[in-house]
Length: 287
Image (cartoon, rainbow, N blue to C red; front, top):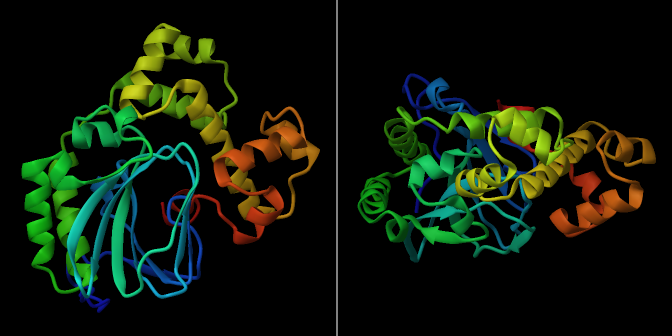
C-alpha cells in the first residue's frame, strides 16, 4: 500500500499540497479521513480540479453531490490490487462507506472534459463507476500498470498528472458547449433554455443533444445543478442563510422550492447541509 510521504519540492510534478479538515472534494463530503489537496500544473487547470487523496479509517464516510463533473478515482488497499475508475456525473446524491485501510486519490474532470477524455457519450456514464480498462482497454490498462509501479501517493499523482497532460493537451471542447456552460454558470442556472439555445446559435433540440453528449444532462437539468451549486457556494459564506430573499435571488419560487431542490440533490435539508460548508472546494479554495 502507498505511503503519504511527501516528495521533494524540487520535483517538477510535486505541486502544492494543502491539508484540510473534513470538507468536500468536488461536492463529495468527506468525513472521518484526512483529506489532502494538490493543485494541478497550469496546463491542466482548464480541464481538471485539484488532485485529492485520503486514507480511509473505520469512521470514513463519503457523500457525493451532483456538480456535473466526472472523476478519475484510484483505489488501493492492503489486500486489494490497484484499480482506476471513471466515475460519471451524478444526477442524485450518493453515500459510500469505503473499507478501512484503503488509499484513495484522484481528480475531477470538469464538465465537457469527460467526452474528449473518453470518447464516450457522457449521458451513458451518468451515475456509473466503471473500471477504466473496461471502458478504454489499452489506455486504462497502461495507466493502471504505471500506477502499480509507484510507491507513494505523490508518485501516483505524478503519473496521473503526466497521463492527463498527454491525453488532454490537444483537446478542444465544442465551442457551443463552452458557451452553454459559461452562460449557465454566469447566471447560476437562471436562464431560459430558448435563450440559451439562441446564445449557442443552435436549436433547443440540438442543444439538448449536445449537452447530453458532452456533459451528460439536458440543459434544464444542468441549469438546476448549477443553481444548486450556486446555493452551496452561498452556504460557504453564509451557512445559516437560506431565507426567502436568497431563494428569490437564486431563482427559486420560494423557500419550499429551495428546500425541495436541496432534498433532491443533497438528500437532506438546507439546515442539515449548511454546517458542513459544502460549497464546491475546487472553485472556492483551489483554483
